[in-house]
Image (cartoon, rainbow, N blue to C red; front, top):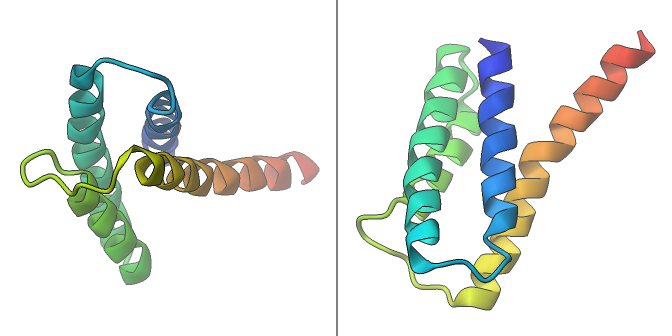
Length: 103
């Protein structure tokens, strides 16, 4: 199950960083839908392990990115949010990978 969470985090981070480019509107809709599903899965996975803090974080991100009732932040703010979240997804993965290689 850990590898599926890793794949979800990497895919979400890549999609969020691609949002920094000038893409068609449909791409952003696609990212919102994928983010809703991905963060929902991550929230469920960590709740199964009893990690309530991460569950609320991933659940909040699922609500933030859900495509049905859009939250209008403006492109610049969305870009900042996308970068922060992408880094928040990737940095722990890189840290864990580095720790595994040291052992």
